[in-house]
Amino acid sequence: MRKEELYEKGEELRAASCFREAVLAFQKALEVTPSGDGAFRLLVLKRLGDCLRMVGAFDEAKRAYTEALHLAQSVQDDLEVADCLAGLGLAQRGLGELEEARKNLEKAREIYEEYDDPEGEAFALWALGGLWRAAGELKRAREHFTEALFLFEQLEDPSGIGYCHCGLGGLERVAGNFEESLVHYGTANAIFQEMGDRFGQAYSFCGIGNAHRMMEHFSDALEYFRRAEELYRDIGDEVSYAWTLWSFGTALKVLQDWEGAEGKLQEARELFTKTRDTRGMVYHLLALSEIRVFEGRREEACSLLEEAERLLVGKPFQLERIHLELYRWLILGGDGAVLEDIRRSYRKLGANFLPISPKLPLNLP
Image (cartoon, rainbow, N blue to C red):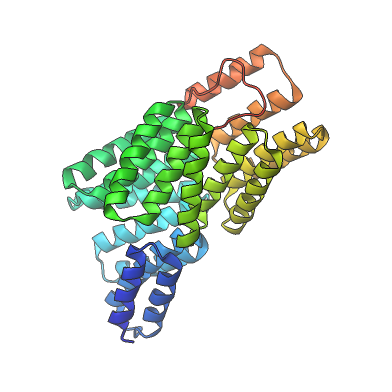
């Protein structure tokens, strides 16, 4: 097939959320593209990076975006440079390289602003919202998601609107505003259903399930997790699917279905390990430590908390550090003053989800 045909095939597969198949098509397109055809290679490399990122191959995505960035810089095309920086920032965010990701995303935003490109600016703002969310800076995350949503609404871009609502839905859940979270995810899901965006549907199904989980509507939560699972398996996603498995396992844990919970958490752990998701591994260890407490294996539970603490060394994940302190307080015991310190730490980041008397099993947002 000609390089243009392979590229079009990759685009069709990408639009259908068939990301692994799209990767193969784009890789074949690169193989038959002469090294001197820099403009076409740049186009393919950006799309290849997008799809590699969606399947959790963040190292490979980073390499694709970096090569594309060098090509864009060589022809001095600033908007192409911005696109490559935005993609590179998202790949770095996936690898937990949040400071490098922030610099690249903010540089991309500056270029989009300079060239009056509201679509690019909205995308960069959305990506920065996710970065601040991962770092636990919930107030900053809200500002960026809200600003991105405003721009996408002005552009009448349904996909951008949907993914901003997903970002805000996740943010409101972590902040303890569960009903608002449900509204955001429901709005996003309706948009994705109309668009036929299967990945967006899976992503928002998981978000709806998590909102129900936090409101202790467990039968609804499990149903939405099952819907998300089915779609993610069909799509072949491993990044967001891992979080659906963790959420599913957490719901089962709260219901004290220890065997079912551990099964889902084990599946999540395998994917978190494969995609090198440090945050995911921390959440897995925290949940598993609870199960060990209920099994009477307190010493092993404490070892799991220590392992989680080691993973967080040198990482910018502030929210997860507070979660760890809450687990330690619940498992090892502590006085009310310590709990109030933990509450203050949550509030400082913009979260206020703790019940009056937290207890195991804990339902983390």
